[in-house]
Image 1 (cartoon, rainbow, N blue to C red):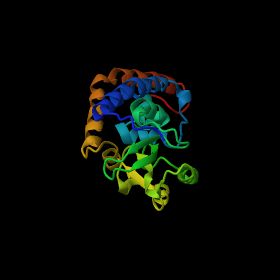
Image 2 (cartoon, rainbow, N blue to C red):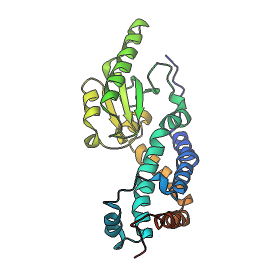
Image 3 (cartoon, rainbow, N blue to C red):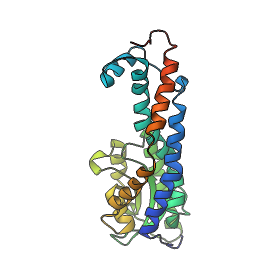
Amino acid sequence: MPKEIGTSNEDIIKKAKIFFKETIAKNHVKNTTKLKNINNFNINPFLNKYLANYLTGNDDPESIAKALIYPRVLGTSITTSFGSNLQKFINTTLEGYGSTTSGMDIEFIDKIDGRRKYCQIKAGPQTINYDDVTTIQNHFKSAINLGRTNGIPIANMDCVVGVFYGENSDLSAFYKTIAEDYTVLVGKDFWHHLTGDENFYKELTDGIGEIANEFDSTDLLDKTIKDLAEELKSINGIKRS
């Protein structure tokens, strides 16, 4: 098993900010720009005017464009980007806790109970599905068996799913199934066990939040909406009121 290298709490925050700026924020801008093309949407003709009116009080092309773009820009785009780059976050930000155990993302000495933990990282409390449960359980069973073979006792409680954000009350039924046999640490609890700092979760999210000051994309968003509105004008049934 690897020797504990150690990563300071300050290093984690610093690297997390770099990761967010260079990967998440830049991809967000790139994905926003793509939305000027109507082919990036599956437009529902039964709902587009309703949603536009619900949002702005009218259903002209620009309002429909806003109703299409806002959910993507403020919801799915940024969430998908973070999830798809999760492994990069682990490799660049938590590399000091890297694991050589197959199926594990990181290993760390738990700052609460002092035991070595073998950990799979997940983004959020709703980000695994039914098939993931069996995969995670099998990885943990393999780690325990490997430890037994090598004379290293690994208890079920030492096999951890670390969830970056959320609360225990937010966990899906799939996580709760895993928690019946293994440890699931979510949000504040995960970062507390990893770093020993009960307030680290807030310090980390506040640190990343500082990056927001560097990314005012109001002009980009306005231009993207206008460009998409021009394409929408050419579609039958979508005309300027």
